[in-house]
Length: 110
Image (cartoon, rainbow, N blue to C red; front, top):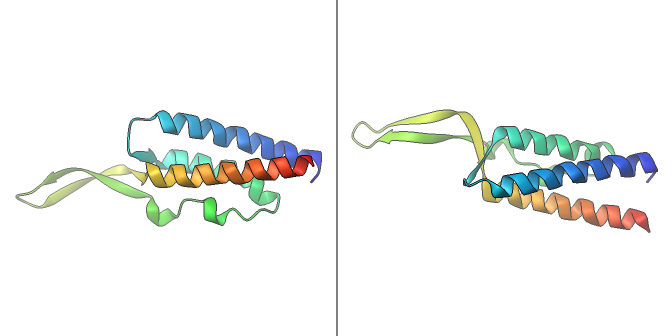
């Protein structure tokens, strides 16, 4: 791996680490779709370097609108316009991607 590719991977690692820190401190069980998009963008350098990152990506089917109001009498439910993914799933994917990237960067040093 050349120095340019290593630099792109280090930048990706920095972005992933920042997401990990900031999302972990959020006091909610859900992560906004905006952060999922940022996460997928941070994975792009790995993908363009030739790594298969499909298993680290959040499946679009897991990004859903949340209900925020329901009426048990009328059985009507109101959903948010914004979409979310469960925080536990997002963090599991993010942590796995970081572990993989760290192992890849460590291996490229030798």
